[in-house]
Amino acid sequence: MTDLESDIARLVERDQEALECPFPLFERIQQADAPLVRSESLGAWIATRHEHVLEIMRDTNTWSSRSPSSVGGRASAMTMAMAELAQDPEMAQVLATVMDDRRQVAVLLNADPPAHVRQRRAVNGAFRPARIRAMEPQVRAISNRLVSAFAARGRVEFVSEYGVLLPMEIIAGALGVAHDDLLQFKQWSDDLVMPVGNASPSVEQVRGFLMSRKEFGDYFSALLDERRASPKDDIISDVANANVDGEPLSPAEALSMLTQFLVAGNETTTKLLTNLAFHLAVQPELQDRVRNDRSLVENLVEEALRFEAPVQGLFRVATTDTDFHGVPIAKGDFVWVVYAAANRDPGVFSCPNEINVDRTNAGEHLAFGHGEHFCIGARLARLEAHVAVNAVLDNMINLRLSESHVAQFEDSFVLRGMRTLDLEFDPVRSE
Image (tube, rainbow, N blue to C red; front, side):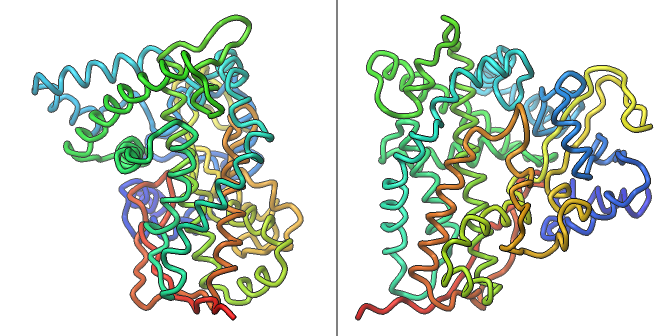
């Protein structure tokens, strides 16, 4: 095994040191002679250069999205755990229900044209600009309530006390979840995201995933029925009543969309907010500059997305034998398109390993994907990030890392985010 392959294996196996700083590894892959690097540990090719990542994402005829979060079709800890759980009659029924739903339909993230185009048209209105603008007062109100709970004490564990709660409450409300069900909603979110970037889940983790898929489906099937009968001004009503060319979404399509909105509107935004707070805390000059010039908030958010994409990359699979700039690719081969690496391509971004709020092309990052699969919730994520940055700067002077902070990253090589973030600050004093 080469040194490069050994380091890729450490990342795939979720070694904490590799998860904490994968960017030197991405840079080494980027500097390889070939446009794609093969990894047997990953079971896929790896694309890291900005132009190649863009090319693959644009070519939906050659590169399918049918398994975006993992390399499918191989014996894995996930499939072995499912086989073990299937020996339990009760779990066998849950497994059968979940797998039947997954086989029925490919939706948005794992769909290709023309199905993806139809589905996207059906729900684009749910995230229309006017809807997102109308949500701003609600986002600010929730943010203010959360901050008020810790603003006077001068310290906060940012992930659990703010980073998780703000996006969770926003997307839960948009999906019609009752406030009393928020803890259950968060549990579903944690369980459903578990397989992403985790090639060796435990049997108990897989059990939790299956049970949460079943419970999520039961809960939202009932809510979708309610919204079809009595629509409200929320995203779940738009999904329940989506109709394109006279054809409604199927129940399986609607449920899969809600699952994706849950993860994209919750888990990834939590990571973005946490990353922003961390970089403000460890860069006092940046913190002071943005505090004194709030016009920089927008570019700071784009730079944070570029510098540390919450989704480091997703997979595509070749639909045919092809040649990619001299690299022969067989039909069925997977490629991991690494947004996090493309976002630090020195051919596109000068001094890519620095956060620069004056960067004029920060918006060229690929943290939200590109083209057909550009994140449908990007406007909402940006709104929440803008509100969060201003809330931090308004209420936390001299923001800094606590001595108790220990960097511990999520157990995933696809999703990137800290599990906890212990901060201290000087409270804003009332006159």
